[in-house]
Length: 317
Image (cartoon, rainbow, N blue to C red; front, side, top):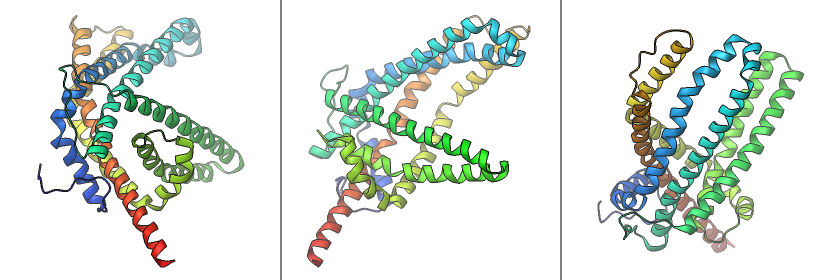
C-alpha cells in the first residue's frame, strides 16, 4: 500500500477515489481480515454448499412434478412440504452464517473508522466482534422489513395497474414503477452503512434524518453501486465458473434420471458437489465482502460533504 495515500474515511473525494480507495483498503488489509474471519468464512462456505447441493438434488423433481400437472403435485404434496421445509432451514442457516461472516467486515471498517487501521486477530481461529455482529443482524432485519414493505407495495401497484389499464400500458407502468423503486432504495445503502458504523444509533431515527442526505447524493451512490455490482458480478462469474458448470451438469443429470435415462454421474458425485460448492462458497465470501469497502468511503465522502455544507451555511448566515 502507498503509505502517502490518505485513506481517512471522512474526507472529500471523488466517486472514482471512493471506489479505488475502498478496494485498496481491502487488498492492503486482506491478510488481517482473512486471519480474523477465516473460520466464519468456512461456516459460510459449508452453509452455501449444503444449500446448493440440496437444491440441485431436489429441484429437478419439483420441476418434473410441475410438468406432470396438478395430479402429480397432489400425490407428492407431503414430499413438497418436507422439501420446502428443509430448503427453508438450509436458507436460514446460510443467512445466519452470511450475517456472521459479513459482521467481520463491519468490525474491520468500524476499527478503521475509529483508529485509522485494521488489526489482525491474536488467536489462530480469528475473532468475533459481538457489537458488530449485533449491528449486522439488526441491519439485516431492518433491510428485510424495508424491502418486504416495498415488495408488497410494488405488487399491489402492479395488480392495480394491470386491472385498470390495458396489458401493454400496465406492463410499461410496472416497469417505470420498478425503476422508481430502485432509484428510491439506493439512498438506503448510505443509511445502512451509517447505522452499522454508528454505535448506539437507532435505525428509525437515522432513516428519518439521513435518507434525505442520501437522496441528495443519489448520483454518487448510483455510480458506486453500478461499478461495484459489475466488478462483483464479473469476479463471481470467473471464480465460480467450475461450480456453475457442475451445477448445470447435476441438474441435467437429475432431470434425465427422473425421465428414465441413466445417471451419467459417478457414485461419488454427491461428495464432489459438497466439496466444489464449499470451495466456491469460501472464495465467493471474500469476493462479496470486498463490495462493502467502497460503500464505506462513499459514506465518508457524504458525511464530509454534509459537514462542509453546514459550515458554509453558517458562514453565509
